[in-house]
Image 1 (spheres, one colour):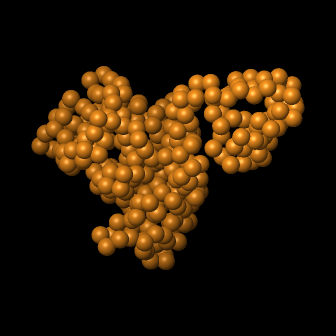
Image 2 (cartoon, one colour; image 1 turned 45 degrees about the vertical axis):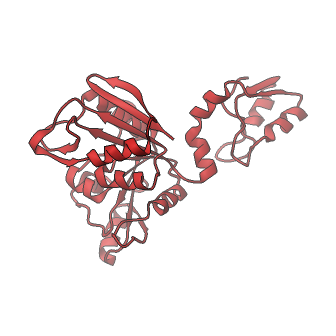
Image 3 (cartoon, one colour; image 1 turned 135 degrees about the vertical axis):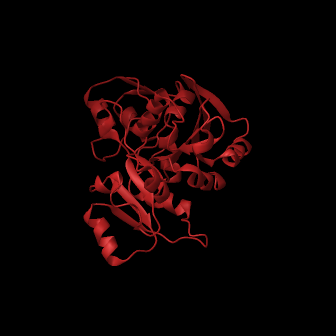
Length: 291
C-alpha cells in the first residue's frame, strides 16, 4: 500500500488508519515522510512490525514535503499557514469603482484560493468599501467557502453588508477591541463569533495575537485579502508563508485609488529573487513567493 503520509495511529474523529491497514491484511506499507503529529510520529513502525507488516519510508520525500507544507507548519508552529494575495494594475493601483483590474481567468484562480483556504481575513474598511461576499463561486465548490474573519475595532461594519446579513453560527468571526453592550449583543444574535483583543498605540491589532486566536478556533489555512494597509502590516512582520501577486496589463487611470508602489517595492526587497512565475491567465501574470 502506498500512502502520502505515515498512517495515523491515534484516535480522533475517526479510528486510526493503521487499524484499517492491519484488518485489511496488507503485507507492506510505503510512505514518503513521518507524520509530525506527536500522537502518531514514528509509532506506525512498531505497530506494523508487531503484525509482520513491512514498512518503507522516504520515497518521493521532497515532493511530499511540498504537499504537506501547510500541515507541517500548523503542527509545528501551532499557527495558521498564511497566504497573501494582491491584484495590481499596470500603474500600480489596487482599487477602482469603474474598471476591473484582472480578467475573468484570474478571478477563477482567486476563487480557487478561497476554496483551498478554510478562512479569509479582511478589515472593516475593505468590507465597508467593497461589500464583498468572500465566497468561493466555482460551481460545485461553494460549500467550501472560507470562514470570514473581519478586523473591526469598534464593531462599525455596515449592518446592511452581505457579510453581516449572511452571518450564521460558525461562518463569521469579528475581532474587536471596544463596543457598547447592546451592539455586542446584536452581533452575537446574528451568530457572529466575537474575539476581543487589545490594540497598540496606533489603534491596530497585534497580528501575531490575531493568528494565535484564530488558530485556537480551528483555522489552519488563512487567505489575506485585506488590501493595502493589512497587506503592509503582514509584510512588516513577515507573516506571509506564501504570496500571490496578480499583475494586470491594464491601467486604472484617474479613477483609481490606493497606489501600492511602496508595497511592491517592499515585496521586492523582502522577497528578493524569491518571486517565481506561477502562471499566465490570459493577459494577466501571476507570480508566487513561498517562504
